[in-house]
Length: 427
Image (cartoon, rainbow, N blue to C red; front, side, top):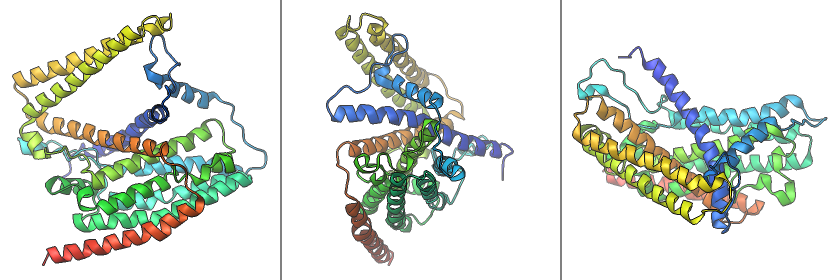
């Protein structure tokens, strides 16, 4: 039976999904820069500061956002204005239409702890989430084609043709890579898929070939190196968004990083157990919420304590480096991190000593699963960055050959082998 608060929770889930992506995107931009710097053995952005704080270059992301909002908006004279303006809206809009399918936590069922009449809060509002993703993700190609053609620029058009060819080519093995996993799970509902993996095994163990094909196709679908044929600077200037400036260019940027986040979330759900905490199913977390919370808060508090020590060491070693307020950054960070350590360690002690209300178990389980899911997504996003600054860009013919001659047959063989194994085991 539906609760009268259920529609409000559906709105809450969708708003939360979009908010999560909007928070992860600037973090990914920072991670891209610092990750590239780390791989190339250089410091990367670190000079922008607000008062004594630099936060290892995080303020550069804020500066970039301000610059894009206030930069002069130049529209070339001979573009097709309707399609030119519609292209970035389509790219961003499609990304945010697909993000709502991601299940961030298991269904919070208060009736199992004696709280009858409370609403159930699920992690995703759509039962056919994977079909929703494939239905809308393919629409991104329209934004790419519109941008290249409407710009009235040969480099933009060539970039759009390359990007659209890659997207359409890799959509087929991407969809086929999921079929083997769906044959095992027996459902297309993403929450049910995550739940199944918690009861049996993660998808990456049962479908390693499917997981490999999916992640490779995800790189191509998001136009990330080594598949960024639409943005080969030495050949096409900047590809399909060459003629875009100001926040219109920023929307393409936002769409790319949002697509990375969604692809990472979908991979985590299909092959890494989604919101599943390793060795701790939802029922166990709810039934033993006190001890699990005590250990969780204790571990997080200890990590904050370690970061506090690192910040203090940084403060001492960099004393007098700038001769201004930036010299105090390490101390300010140490105070903030130390406050976090005291908070979590104190919460660990309180949870262990005080009696907990009945609603604590389901709520704590959902919060813990949400953070575990985000941790998996961030790890996969780091993989996107890691590969970009490790592998060289492929030639266009190599990109096409890999999609049609390698991944497509491999995906079909994976489906065949999966079907044979399922048939033999079910006899």
